[in-house]
Length: 314
Image (cartoon, rainbow, N blue to C red; front, side):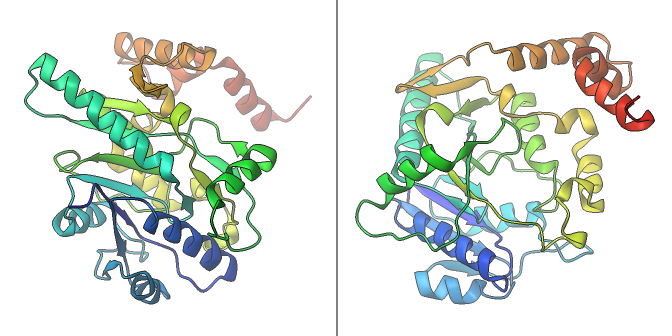
């Protein structure tokens, strides 16, 4: 039985660069030990990639009014058609390497041990990590030693993305049973995943110190006006479905544990984590205040930027 079922809804393979980076990403998943892969959607090129790599393909994912795959339908199809106990939704431009599986196995073992000690009935958790951004202008060469070469390129030319925006979530099948009708590829739904895990008191584990995931940079030509998804109307709908902006402010700074040197430890208290913790405490105490009020108190620099944009630099 596979260890992990990866599932994703790729973009159309019509743009040559998007096609190249998606093919490289999916190919990297096929090389992982114990991986089962499910491709979702009927966009151009998906069926062909599924046949080429002998992957499961389910084209009938439910769509939004604008034709964007719904997260709820993706989860339902993956849960129903997977043969592993661990599911992983992952963006189709992410390259994964052997350390991904190693980190998953380490976390699973450590959590199982903790579960036995606490006599807990069910093991519930979610794994995530920061990504490394890298420009890729040619298909990845998967010849022997490709992982080592890629890591060297990332260290020379890549950049660690800030701890916001998550490109994969790995969790047991018994988690995330009730997903709102978020649209994929728009902001908000990934933040809600962390919020939901924290609300349900699951372990939220940041694996950044123990693995490297590589995001292949791309433009936003597939979106209206070629603009990032933050200003897209479906992002606003995602925020509404998440229960408001406070619930989509959750990021890796809200992780409860980190996988570091083979151990699950509390994240180091950086200035960013301290600010975020203070914000959550103030939200609980002053729950009656508007969402933006607490943010303006905790993050005065961001508030100054807003004022500057409103009135111009004088």
